[in-house]
Length: 239
Image (tube, rainbow, N blue to C red; front, side, top):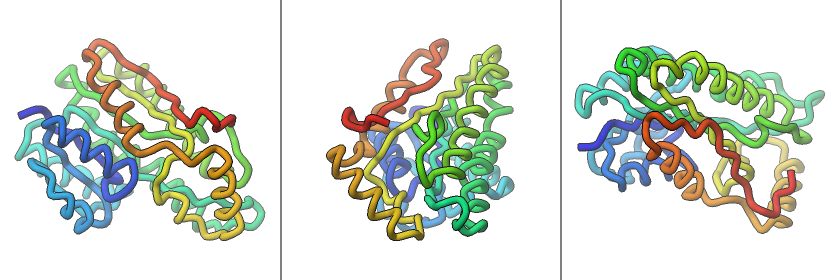
């Protein structure tokens, strides 16, 4: 059996497609998200599905330990869970800001904390963080979302430098618009309508399978090669 892959946000969008892809390649997969029944409906072989709040370190560690008892040590963690709550900063509910910070930033840290020390001790392992083009440049109505994704990019690069001597890879994949339910989290209908009109102008977003292709490419490189960052978007997406 191939090595264990742990994926957060595995009940929809990019996370679900990552689970399908790595399972199809023969890896046992720990799928983590709130909606356990949705993940179980995929019926992937050698998989474990757990309903976990990614901001809960103890729950994350417990799920990882359970999977490792079945399938061996985690070789790849993909931190994919995320929220995109767009809004005008003077009007947006503070709770939406807080939720994005919790999931998009703390959620990356809990997953990382659950596996990184052991990877360092073994001198092997890979962590892929799903960032965003919004972690490299700013967009209207994205202010706090951009802040969370800038944080993901900064944490990934800083940690990469610090663990590189232990042969552990830290990678960030930064997609542009992707066809996922992410926009549905936004509560402002006008912002959602304008976003969808813009998507039509660029002929829609990327498919989640194209992000899974990027993750597979980076992971399949030899352990001594780290593809530090992949930025991917539709050709017509100018920004």
